[in-house]
Length: 365
Image 1 (cartoon, rainbow, N blue to C red):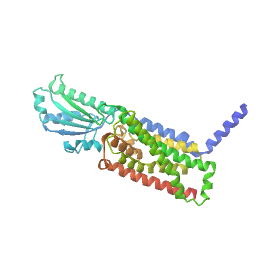
Image 2: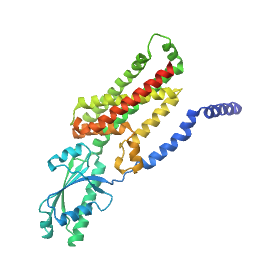
Image 3: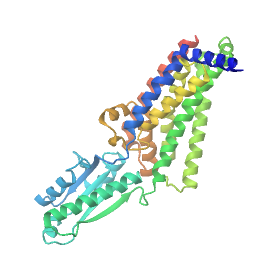
């Protein structure tokens, strides 16, 4: 019995060593994932893009703004739209906080009267919003004591936009919707096609009059339908069970999801051309999903990641779809606010699906 076990172990080790794809899965990909996990997940909230509306325009108000931006916490936006268009800036993700300094700021401050300073915060991410609020309070208190040497701080009048109750589930569920449709469509499409090759039915299909385009479309459409079904269930569960408000357009979300599916299905199609077994396809799809999730802003804001990782996130299609889902569900964002992400998704979808289609056609021909 021991000899049988040793023989089986030897055979399995030999198969692993002989399979280059499996060696990459075992040694290379875990290292990449370790690096991504170490750098991408960061719960610190820094570099908060902030719009400043200074109606006082005094030396004291400028000192206060300077105190806000002294550390790495608040970064003043170079272009601040009119205050009436402040909400548009939140929807377009130009900034996540807006500081409003009244015209009587310096007068009341010098007279040691309470100074009402407004602070609007994007509450989509409840955790980041709470930390941002705490930073603002702390800086206001320190500024007050440094200027007047009295304990009474500047009075901050804060308003949490889009998530006034600061519920973290409001931020997580839209992200989960994006993650689900990514994993379901990429993994199922890659494994199903490989399964056909593994059991020998793919070769049987190729000797029939079925054309390659018809075969690809027939294989991908069912997974697109499953993806929409999975997305609908998750959305309805989030809205009906968790009570998450859906303030945007349902048709816009489904239309942009259709564009995003060209990317995920294209990735699944590509995986099917570089793998030979369902196990390999599953690991490749899993690796793509983990990388996409960690660098999409699902767990922590992209702005908190190291600069090098931030550049890498531009190559992640899920980054743009994550912004779209959260923007439509929580902020009611429309096409004019999301057009940069829409353009990026169209480019990714066309390039990935077309290249995967051509590679698959060449492989089976």
